[in-house]
Length: 161
Image (cartoon, rainbow, N blue to C red):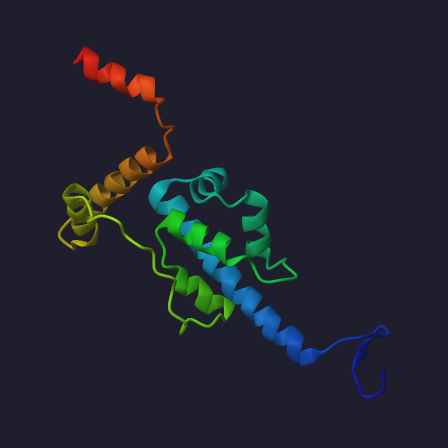
């Protein structure tokens, strides 16, 4: 095509490539830092990050390399962030996504359990040590991902006690 720069006979659009590459680099940097932090503070391997976030290792590796043709799925980005305790808005910012639209609200049918509220307060309290916060998060993750007991097994504990 006349007027368009070429490399080895192949034409390319410089403006689109630069914008996409900048977004890919920014998101790859975000993901790499999140992985480094998970390794350093939680001693998680890549497999453990994948298990905890629900995002495959292959997908995470593609994100780190910036090897994606279309934007990552928002649900996967959110799952990755939530599994690592990160704010998805930071990832959305790296991707250049519009963060001005309000997030969908989740209807709550009941008030928060007082014990859960107490745990959340401890997690944001600057007087609580990082080690204690780590143990609180690990316990919550364990409970969140353990298999639920069948109904018959739940009743057995009540009868035995």
